[in-house]
Image (tube, rainbow, N blue to C red):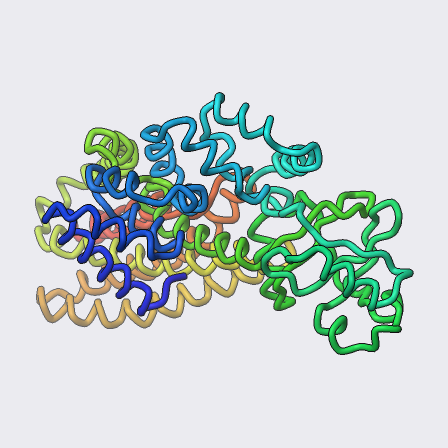
Length: 452
């Protein structure tokens, strides 16, 4: 996640770029942009309107473009690839890590993929094939097959000489992976232990065997939770026969956490975290039209409930004034439960064993808050409209709606999860419909029975 200082830097870079672009000082733009980290450049490109984005893209040094393509979101990447010559793309992605290349593999033109794969060694091809055989949102899709392995029967001096001969280590290397002759995972040797123990000690006496390995099919969210629980920098990935496939590093996990946060936030409005903020108007309008249509349908459903009690509203005009209170209170109460349950599902804290207990707890909270606020609303309504009956009716409706809101907020995400539907996407719309319909029906229904 970006810190406040990083956001300020982004705003400042945007301001300087805009000034340079407006003045036509492209040499200055080139100097400004190429002095930044690839992640910062990617963030700036996503923040630029299409016209300026393409101008800046052409000014970026070729050795930076591959890493930038990995960092930008899917739609921006597709647009940049479309405007880049094939030969430049080949040069850009040829030096990427295997896991990074796998991330953008499907976005690259066929001719580029053909040339890149042809230039790879047999070992790198096998590594790429291994990563791409798994879902991109799984441990296998996140892993990097470039790992340093050692045997258990050598001493630490041999390991140190091997590392010196190798010359460089992969990023975020905090441990070496110990494997047998068949590449079966045995344990890890921490770099700190390698440096602090006697060189004459053997790997088998220094290694740790209690670090768990991840299966390649584990979801990316579960991987993130695993890293959080065990405070890891890297973790091994093994197949069902315990063969070491690769490793996942904390930088990939941070990306997962950020992507999940963006997705959860935007999906509630029917948006995608990979959408281009500066996409053409027609494309953006088309995307949002679908979600607006869904919401329009639910609005008509609520309006249909109100129309059933048109005669009651005509006789007691105060009902029209008070209806939004019941629906709004239900919506807020339901959203609180909904967000709590969605978070619990994401953190694997809610399952069959505790779902019923949580449901009863939320129903009790809804009832208690319903009683509390129904008294407040009833008193205000009775004084406002000089009608104790109206106050009692809205109080009763409020209790009913808050209890149903708690019930809906707890059961909707669990039901959607069982149907393999993301609760963050559809949960809010369904909940709003339920609280509106129940709120209007209970309030106007009670009014029809007791006031007309």
